[in-house]
Image (cartoon, rainbow, N blue to C red; front, side, top):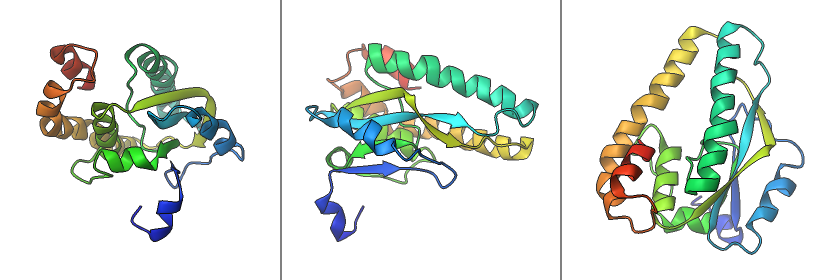
Length: 183
């Protein structure tokens, strides 16, 4: 993001190395920004190429499918907030800059940027019908490492953002509900 050529662009698509966006990914995501100057993020759904590999991947598929099918869609529509999944999303560069940029202050920097962008009044859209292929951890050891990272970071972030959440005027929830939701 610090390269000179970035100033010539309005959007950045973010993918982890093991994600495989379809050839029409940008054609299906970028148009959602048109006429919506307050839109920061268009988040796509994850689809798992190895969901039937073993019992662990089948259980992860059930869990993550619930997150995408229910949590992200409902939160996006009714609460107007969901966390950035760290990958398979397109960000408006101005939104990233507006809320302080990508910081490495927690192990969940994707959640951090999403919370800060929301506190600054930016909006998100979740697209359940735009899928990006990826892999689930197939061994218990890999799954355990992933889950530790995913679950230890939110508490770090909560401590860092607690006062900002209480002060936020953009949240439509009362502060105690906002804290519970973000937690």
